[in-house]
Length: 586
Image (cartoon, rainbow, N blue to C red; front, side):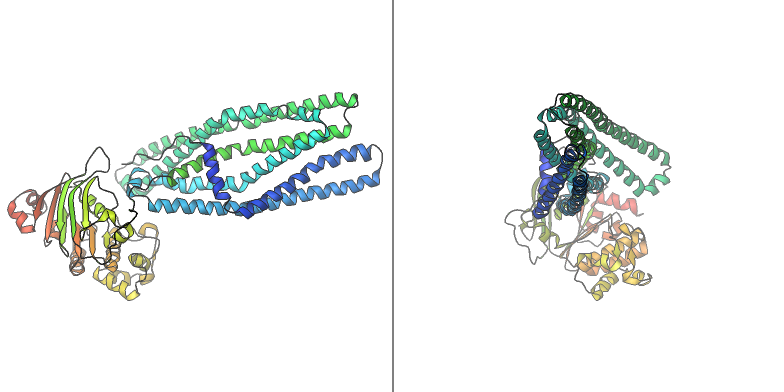
């Protein structure tokens, strides 16, 4: 069940870049302004060496100092404008990238919310959070910084190339002679670098998943004295991350030193060729100085591209991991023309239902069960028998392998999921409270409920007295996952949440398994009132809680082996009889 299902192989980087561009181009006006700013900055930058050439050849060598002063002033203005346009383009690009990231986060979270439970069964929560945080952060850094540098570098390369060929084609060819060497080198290592960066992100996700799991279960770890084992296992993940990071950096770090070597080789060629041409009268001192500036200017964007190369590769790897989730298919889908489900009586029927979380193993086998409106149904059986799976299927968290489940004669697979779930109140075995207030958590099932309605629901759940004793009552703060409340208190609040919803069908999955016996009796009184006139499904290990059920369904190995009321099943002296006697003497 924990097997990773999101693909990790390297996909087409062009497709990833195109998708990122689709997010950026949504702010077309901003992109146009950035391009204009970068073009103006490039023009100002390219003009610098030309003005230097004029200063040397026209004014310094001829001694025209007055004209030289004006030219130097103009040169200062040009460099100032270049810096100004650079700043403006960078500032606007940050705004554009933040809008793009806003949309990426929105699409990622929206899709995660719509994905079926099977997706979360098969993927580690820590790895999903790593994609949502670490990968998004990496993309953020790249979009806000690297994109503008790439655009600026490309335009400078184009502008400088044009200027060099206008001034002296021979020196221009000499300057760009070494570029193909660098290009070939980058192409050779790019695929390998991207692979290791994506692998590093995956290993980081695994490390986060392991750390989160062990921290969440720290009480169990300490209870069994497994601290050292956890430390050793974490070390394995940490070593894998270190090794993968070193490999990624090893390949990406090759770019800069080789580029510097090629740059120095280019400068030597310019001086050698330029000196020879000057001696023969085909070049001037000013043009050589200009070309040395252009050479530096020409190499600078290449150096920038080399510097940001690793971050771009890491960003592409992170983007691929995010798009892997966004592209993951939603397994439980609504039909195009769903049936309406307004008022219901609560008749539920399972007809020849078969289901397995994997294709290799069926959890439920040929389940046939009819529940009349208002009946109280208890599902009992050993752990792993399929009790929770039945209510998961009723809520349509998963689709059936075969068979049909109906409510009031309507196939639930043909009803919109949101409409179906509005009819079902659920108290899950693993109770979850959200960060906020007690009032917010109870109202989660009915956001427009009044305080009086909330209090009434809490009274029925036998939790009102406890809440009233809190420092701020119903407005008391709830920490993340309800960590400042006991397990029993969290479950009582969850029961109040279900009572408030007042749905036609009620599901209680181990609803009283984490409260003391006295509280359990009080809850049963409230549940009896709540379930009156409602179709209810209860799963409980404590058989004392379901003795008065209208029908008890005994499930073993995914099959219904016994049905009936408590006394009937006791008199039958079958599996339920043995199970009951294992909990109660005589």
